[in-house]
Each structure stands twice: as C-alpha cells, then as structure tokens.
Length: 511
Image (cartoon, one colour):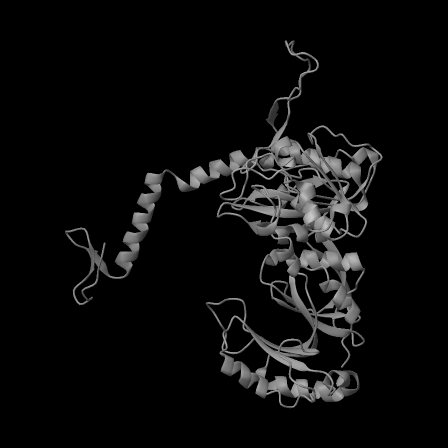
C-alpha cells in the first residue's frame, strides 16, 4: 500500500528542515550509521550538510535521533556520497535492502526484496565482482563463531564472485541493534538491517589534523573533531572568507581551510599568536622558531588559504565597514583556563616620562562576560553576509541552565544548540546563528538574561564551593556514604574499628 507523505517543518534546535514524513516509493532507502560520539551534535551537522549540498532527505515518522542507525530516503547514491564526503559524525552510509524488528521475518523479507528487484541488484552479484559480508552487533557481543553462523544463514544471496575480505568490490553489512542501554539488553534485537556499503564518512580527517602531530598547539587548542563539526555547521564552502576573532593557536582556522575557505583571525594575546608563549607539550622547554598558525596551515597543505592573523582587541573593532564574512567561527575565552582581557579605556592619558619612540604595551582589564558576547553578536550582525553563520561556544552551569539564558539578537536566528558536558557542574553549548536581517536599527539589538550577566568564572567557582564544601566536609560525606553502604550489606562496626559481617555472615572484614 502506498504511504501518503505529509510535509512538516522539523526544527533541529537552530536548523529548520523541510522533511517529508513517510517513505516515497520513488526514492532509495539508505542507513546513516553514526559513531556514538558527540551524539548531541549529529542532527545539527546532518542538517547543515543537507544545506551545503542542497540535498532533500526523507525520514520515517518513528525517527529517533539518538539511535546510531537512521533509516532515511535520498534521491540517489550520488547524494549519499556527497553527504558522507564531509560528515564527521557518520561512520558510513549503506543502501538498505532489508529492515525489520522481527528476527524471524528478516530472511523472508530480504530474500523477497532481492528476487523482486533482481534487475536493479543483479550487477552487484556478477562473477567478476568480489564480495564480503560483515556482521555487526550494537550493544551485544557475538563471538566469531556466532558471526560466521549468521553469515551462513544468508545462503540465498545469489553471489557468484570470489570472496575478498580486504578490498571487496561489494561490501554487504548485516547489523543487529540491541538498544542503547548496556544494563538493560533486550531478549531480541530491536532492529535487524542488511544492505550494501556506499560510502564512509570523513572521520579520517580527525586523525589527519590530530593535535598529537600538529606543529603548533596551545593549552586550549580545539579538539579536531569539534573544530571540523563547527566548520560544517558554519556552512563553510570552497572560497568562503572565514574569521575567528579569538583565534588562539588557530585550530578553527585549520578546520575551515581544510574545507577550502580563506581564513583569518585576530587575538589580543601577542605571545600566543606569534608562538612565543610557554610550550604546551610535556618535556618541551622552548618553542621552535617556526611554531605559529601559518606553520599549521602549511603542515596540512592549506598555506594558500591563509590570509593573516592580527593582534587586536575585539572590544574595539578594527575592520572596514564594507567587509563581509561568510562565516564567523570562534571559541571565546570563559575565564577558567584562559583569561578574558580587553584594553582599558582611559578618557585621558597620564603624563609619563617615556619618549614617543619607546614601545608601549597597553594595560588590560577583565573582559566582562556579558560585554564579550554583546560585542560578538553585534559584530556578527554587522559583518556577516545575509545568510552567513556565527558558530560559537557558550559556557553554562548544568544545574540551572535553560534555553532562555542563551544570547539573542534580532538579526541572528538560533538554528542549532548542542551540548558538550565538561564537568559535573559545567557544560558548553555550541550555538549556531544565521543572519536573517540587516536592518540598521536592529544591528545593536543584543539581549542576554540577567542571570548570565555575571562572569562565568565567578558563577562556576561559587557553585563548586557551595556543592563541594571544604575538604574536611567532603571526607566526612564519603565516610557517611561508606557507613550506610556497609550497614545495608549487613555489617556491624566492631570495637577495633573494623566493619564485620554479623554472625552467620562469614569471616569477611573490611577497614
């Protein structure tokens, strides 16, 4: 029976996608297989890549974003390859031939699909094409013998070519999904899938630009996977102009340049930008002479996309008003691991005995949290092209966070909001804004909840102190927990200070 399609708008935090619910018979079904890492970022990344490539995608009504296997429909294999060609979240994409939640019905469904579509699938079974079948289970371990037994049940596959386990021409996948909770594994798989591999994601890029092998790094150099995710959410394309106004060691410039953008950055810290700061690596006492941001881009073959890095106080714009950026991608300092600084504003200069020719280093003062994000949002409203994106991190305290605490601006629409947990107290949210208006009267219309006006550092330290107490209090709390646990197990405290089981409980004793 034909399934009617229903058009709705699905909001992926900040990204609005037109997704047709119901599977259109003229499209091909595919499985997007995600790595179970940075789960909260995958939906925003896929939505951004669909926008980059202008690809339509259908998904089922029972779609669950937290699952590692998404069953979707695309218009063809070329769209699947494009989607995988830039994704950091995808392990691979394969063409779906059979999908069921009943293990007993799986083989009948797969066999029937092959027989009814033999004209289309026949080329994959030719004698001159080698093949391989891989069995994969999620949240359940299968021994090698059990995997071989699963492959033997697929005896009806009309393959005639040779087996090639290393470089097959055709790679088939048999997958069983046993849920997400390792402490509550169901008795039967929730999903059984079978299909033909189409393309791998670009997770190899994460290792390619690894911090372990990078020429120049700093204390807060961005994780390669997150920097690439930020570039994707910024819709970075070949030939774009991308700015990082808090550039640091330039990790975000590397990611944007890998996707073909021209990059430039600015920072107030002279020592970091010029590679003169204290080395970050263990046992390295002095930085090498050529350690700098340009050296990183040259290391990855992207030196032709390096525009420049400037020493600049972001609170005082140095940019020409006619300049427009395609994307602004940045990680502002929060005041925890890196100081937030800006140059002090003085109404008049004090008289000094310095000569005019002597180099003067201006004093700095703390860059208030509210003012920093006010400057960033207002700057983006002025210097982004219409449709351009601001991608930035925003620190929060997990205990009291709500979406109403996020920065707002009339010219910028929040299209993505993904969380990365940092500690038991704190997290940071990757916010993606898209410029939707350039009305002059709205360029300075920044808003931030009053609860967030105080510096993040002060709020973070206050919460840690209130929650943790003194060292003596923490140790006393741990002793209370241990005492309650021992009593729950039926132990009693002996006169010599040892916990022992009551009579009949054995000879076990604990300190």
